[in-house]
Image (cartoon, rainbow, N blue to C red; front, side):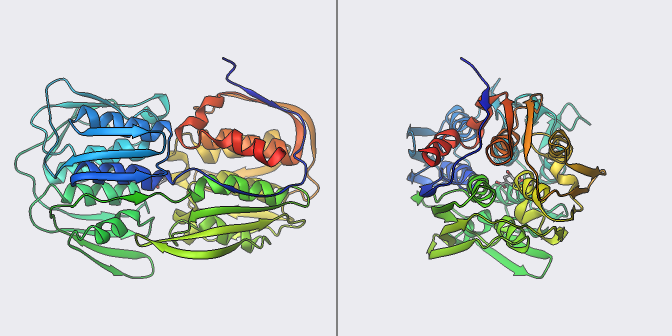
Length: 438
Ligand code: S3P
């Protein structure tokens, strides 16, 4: 089957309401937590994507009984310590950094070496951040001094709690230590730079003993272990998937869009803050609270003029998955936008800072790229008429979606390869675009 898409016309104006697929962070966390809860947990609107399928496959390999049908899923958890470890287990996390890093934490008691593998993109990602804290808990990784997949992990009977300092603003690092603490006696103490806090919220809702002291830049978290009761969850829409449609609407002509029922956790809405600072007027309406998470409908309309921004690194973690799409708005802004301290962006499914810059350059937008920062010299009259072919981007789903949006709003003829990359996070992406075109 053809694995590329060709776009050679801009999108017409539209006035629509859509929903987007379930939040990826919450879908993976629900599955992992349900697998160590006691009894049958149910999820509704679970994201039906490759990253979540890899999660369920790995949990089944670990002896967890699962029924899944598209967006509905039941997991029969055997409690903490209930995984069935065996010799020669090979677990494939596919494209998902969140899965690979978080599942490693739940393997720290395995009596056997377990092989953890992933796809080409996941193999280039850093696992030092996983190995170091899990070593402290008492697990061992092989080969020694290797910091990328494939890796073998062997657990220990003698797991101990740790003190851990998370300095990157990585929710994956914070969450993996929190999950490992559930397998450990005593109290694990974490000083974590601010990052998405879904794991903390879930721990509280599940009555796991957790104390959090928040200051402006850091959270001090103390976690102890306890049994977890099974729990049901209706996964809200993903703000990271919504972001592509928010920017599409902002940059399209005379259009309006409502995206219904989206998770607007304050640690995830950096993209909204940044775009509103640049001149957008994105609004949250119909606010609700569900399982400790904030949910709302997002209202957005087209905007003719954008201001450039000197983006505060304070917003980096809360917008970390959205920078590619924010770069497209900067390309159209009046003046030079600056994004700093973004080295973590090169640690994603592809080196996104570098690849984002390359795509802007292809579009005729000048950038000044450094190791951890980018300046984007905007062109408010940006309008493309050249032909583009986008390939060799490590099949990064968000690079693919960024290019589709660029093609639909700036014009030109685009051939974008590796269409199946969207299956990682948002298999329905192109169908949603179709709805806006109807
Ligand atoms: C995620 C955390 C972020 C994000 C990723 C999902 C999570 O990664 O980029 O897509 O679910 O915890 P880092 O924690 O490495 O920044």
